[in-house]
Length: 360
Image (cartoon, rainbow, N blue to C red):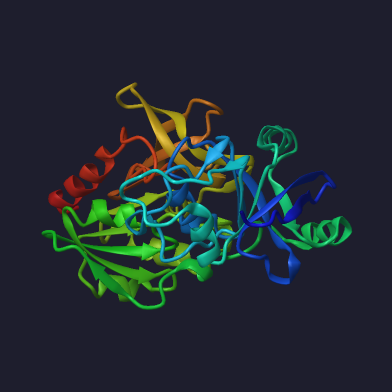
């Protein structure tokens, strides 16, 4: 049995949680990031590899993580961009015919530090009370970890899309429609859904409108991604030049960027929405969709003069979807592709295909 490596998590407000080190060794003795919690019951590999977690340390509220190991095909990004992982209990044995590696080895191989043995219920309650905040964990002293936590800037005022976007354009799928997807941190499951009806050119977050329109797309997709939408350089200028020329569909950060392009404003939620069980009401049909979510920022409901709200979160009544009145464009805050999560909202990809079919 491997030797237990005692470690501690220290939050910026001085709260301390003792535990056991798992995964990779933190660089310089401390892993730092914005500590958030995720409520999924399964799908931990997809969560860890979601590029939208760049700059964050993920706390899993489900107490037993790693019991079915990891599978290469289930990765949502080319590598994990999260700063670390916090769990109550790490499974010491995996049981899954698809699995080829346990979670601890997966984290170690990909350079992701983690901490187990934490009372994640107490940590989650604390984050709900005071809000998501910076933290640090590792084998350094508590005073060093506290200083590191307080020096960590978190996700406010930082352009994290530059860290996760693709370096070069690439193409996936061979469907009849031609779509350009702007990669602000795109998940592989999104590309799987788009490629069922489109040939998808994926371009970097820095691509200009001229570059995108030069590819003669029938639709443009604005992807999910990490961090503060107000800091994504050039995004609103690019999206503004696309609107009216081609149908646009946005998810998560893409939704926030579309809203800001329309003159809307965004703000940071107290502890964000991270999980696979958020109820959202479709205002057109009245139905309730159980959704997968991962975002810390949100669109101000009163700041959208040229768009109609289409979906609302039933937990806190925040904006979950909108549709433009004068141009063919719509977006949602949540993740209809799931990966992981429920499939209630996958019809939105069909709506994007229908919008392109109409040719306006």
